[in-house]
Each structure stands twice: as C-alpha cells, then as structure tokens.
Length: 256
Image 1 (spheres, rainbow, N blue to C red):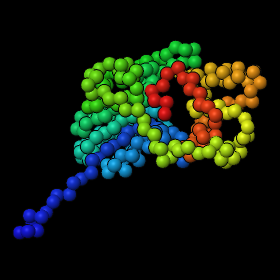
Image 2 (image 1 turned 180 degrees about the horizontal axis):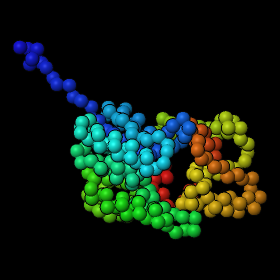
Image 3 (image 1 turned 135 degrees about the horizontal axis):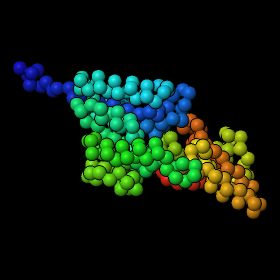
C-alpha cells in the first residue's frame, strides 16, 4: 500500500520540434549557428529538442519534405511545440493545427529584402507580407527588435522581442596579441572586421570598404577583414584580433 502511496508519475520533458532551413553542417559549419546555440540552450535547460532541417536541394523539394514530416507527426502529438525559424518555414510549421506553433522571424522576412539598387525585391515583399499575415495564425511570434515588432503589425500581445542570445562561455575576451598570433596576423596593423557576407546587398559592403579606404588615405596602416563562412571558433578569434567592428547594414534583424 505504501508503494502505491509513494508512487510519483514520471514527468515527461517538454518536447520541441525546431523547423529551419539553415543549420550547421559539415559542409557549412557557419550556417544557422544562432539556431544551434538556441537548441543547445534549450537542451541544457532540460527540454527535449529535435531539429527538422531538410538537406540541400531545390527549395520546393525541401519545403515538401518538411511539410510531409510535420503533417505526419501532428497525428502522433509527439511534440508540445513546433518552432519555425524564418517566414516560409514558419508557414510550413502551421500546415497542421494539432500542435501549437511559435514563429521566429529573423529580419528580412518581416522587413523585406534590400536589393543592390537600394530597393526591395518582389520575393522579399511577398515573404514579408505572408509573414505578417501568419502572425494571426500562429500561437506566438518571436522577433529580434522593436522595429520588427512594429513592422509585423498583427496582434501585438503575442509578439515578443527576444534577440538572439550570446554564449559568453564561447564568446570570451582573448588578448589581442594571442588571437593575432594564432591567425598569423601583423601585430601592429589596425584591423577592421566586417562579419557578414559581402555578396548580400543589405549588408552594404561597399560602404564598409569605402570607409576603410578613406581612413587608409590618411596614412593609417589599416585592413578590412571579412569573416564570412567561418566556424564559430574562428569568428571568435577574428573578433578578438581586430581593433574595430564595422556594421554597415541597411537593416538588421539581430546583428549578434
């Protein structure tokens, strides 16, 4: 009798399915590292997390694979939450109604995609319009800034501003001379870090380049360093080795 009285049901961990089109892989260790950091943090907090990241291929095929997987799992009620990252992947997550959906928007999926001529792409406008409508259909929305929350419109009471977190166990200060020695850099040169893909128009690489050229014209020994497609560990070394970081983007969802 006492055994029955002492019995305590086992509490199941909260189960989350992350749906994303970007995630670190062996071929692209830099892709979606901020989502990987979030997954690691949730697991450390005691949650059970599974990631749905369709492998590289034509976009329609990737969306179809994800949609089929989500639709099938909705019947099992295996997850407590489905958490989509980026506009179209959030839409895919909402193609079922059995499991609550959290939509995380990253930037241009709400603000629009800037083109090389300073305008906005038709595709970007379509995705942004769809994302704003989707705010009404999901259970909660996460954006990275107050600007994004205002642009999202929709039911503001279920839109939460939660910037990407930073793991200070990884991103920690390292003496500059040590970081430069590890990278083989000049100890006396002034380095400026551009930590973005220079091929993406919204990152505005020409402005960063023009600024550094203008400073160099004064006689300063200065170099613009691009950190693109690098693993987390290497980015940490670059940040510690540089004198300054330049953020010339036209718009950012969350620059961290």
